[in-house]
Image (tube, rainbow, N blue to C red; front, side, top):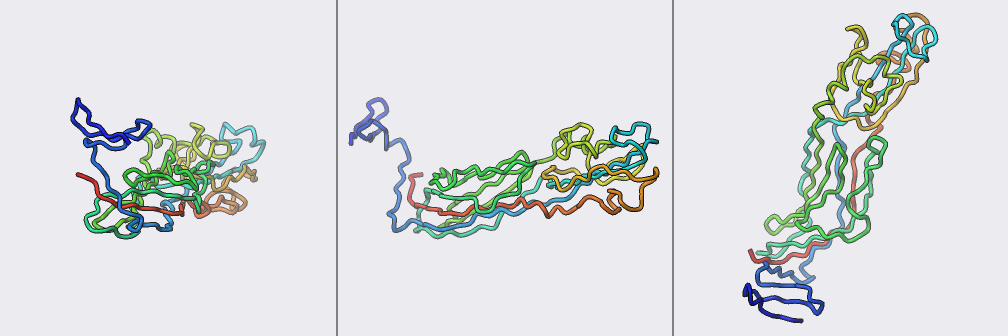
Length: 284
């Protein structure tokens, strides 16, 4: 292969026969150790579920309200809807996992992975959470880090790093802050929105939280979070009389109420496959 000196810079250049530069004296050269020093390991990269809670929407309507919806033909009735919420501003750093050791004085690692998603997160807002790393393919990770999941609420990443003579796997996941304009959409008077509103806050009239009667309408005592998945929708049901019925209603304390089981949604995920680490020495 051609080896020559650049007359303008004085650097030594090495090219292949297609004139591709493969080495030069102005670049820090990396010397990788032979295959006998490589680390090849089968590894599961797991991320836990998020801290979650439930928001509950309840709406009570009657002809005496002065603005009954079209589907309340007579008498009174109610409806409910519950959604799984993800707490904002979560930070999780998984414990380090040691993958192997490298020879003394090695100060560089080349990292390649071949992974598959072996446990998928629950769908987020009815959309499957897609891995950001190509499945069943060898992927080179410059710097050893890879972002593996991203939604508009959370990020998950992992890093294969050199810690002394140990090669370690680090995992991290975070959740976003609540947008500044979200508070107004969680609280306020419901105005018949619980029965025909949108569980994921698409409608400006939809509000979510545990309901208390007062202030001229059903007002939400909300807990701010990220709407993540629908638990249950209780369709509007009529009941005789104008007061809150003692049975058959969907009020949080009555029979036929909507489920508050956030455990039906599991946002944990796992990726499993092969990690190959090639240690070496780099000129610093």
